[in-house]
Image (cartoon, rainbow, N blue to C red; front, side):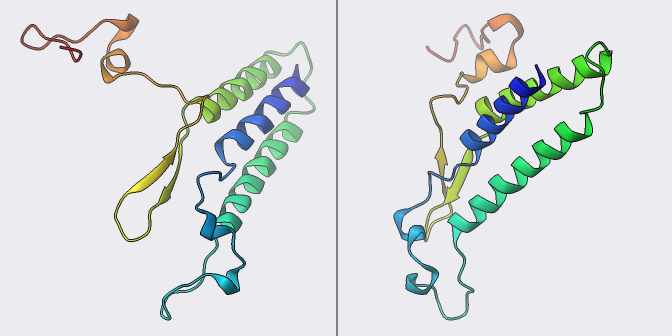
Length: 139
């Protein structure tokens, strides 16, 4: 069970932090990128790789910390459940964004695993719809 949870976490970090929303210009070597003279040259690809490596390092250290737990202990079951819930959160609820050049907007990388829903279902338990003045969001 622990090895499966570990694999799920590693896959989730890859999905969440893979950096595929980067513009093609960020893939150029740093010397070929055009930056204003007063701004330091940064490479978003390098930053994304660092975030992915950091997330994977955190996953590994947490798994190794819990390595000594007995298979029958409640802490083991709780640690596995926590790992699975973190993997689910990273895969379904975390969205990576990249600031677009020249404007104050972000391009979001929403992938096929991203959880989608309208605000009505998120705010109300059991999928109940919010009705205001006899109308729902779809009206």
